[in-house]
Image 1 (cartoon, one colour):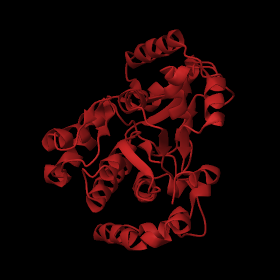
Image 2: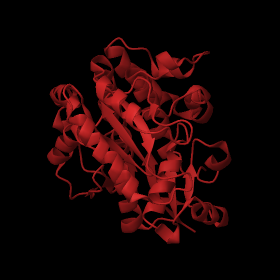
Image 3: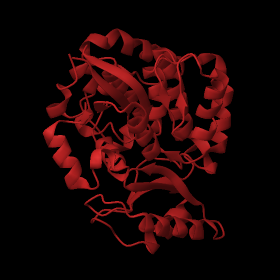
Length: 344
């Protein structure tokens, strides 16, 4: 019996120490594709993806860089999306932040090679400019129950800080029960000083992350548009859900508008991952939400997004776990205990 699925591609921060060797462990049969990516990297004198993945040692300083993390995550995620079992029918594709670029390739709007060019170019530009930074902060408690008043309080404080002289701070990503904020050092420090520590670890800075999805990235967007022509983009083979919750339908997509969104709004305006997941649930009602690897940290944000939508009556973490235990709704391919549920 066919299982319908929405595929969700992860963004930065998902290729960590435990993921070193992911391509070689899970996709040894795709090395020809990865070597094509290596050729593209060689054109700009960058280290091969296969060599990075096959290294003996992991270091955060090296592997959290945009020009290293982005191509590795792209290769792993796209290969996972192409490795699903025959009984799975993908009904839509979406992604978080950089995962939007991956979803374009997973849905066929970009070829695997052109998708790699987009990811590698944007990841490299982000690293070269490295404008600002990011932090994560929750607005729900550990039970995941919605707390819109708390979220509103946080965003009021963000606006207050952003209005201070020489301070930049803005919402970067709506990420389930958390907000990702981005800004300059003064803005980030002001927020850290104004908000209480939550769950013993937040606010949490994200290493080597720029101020993604804010006005500070306008120079990166402009350079990306200059380097990546609209002709790279084609019609998607599968519905694509972007960071506004908009659906791009096969054979009904304005490819120029898709290019414009990808290298414009998507770079400089907030990314609403929560809405993307909720749109996927409401419009496609899949049997499964499949988060491709590497890593498995995005699974929590997907689950929280469904809880915030009261999907299938789930209103908190306990409700999600009960539903997940009865029949898995969410599968993270980066988890060894779940991967086999959706691969051939």
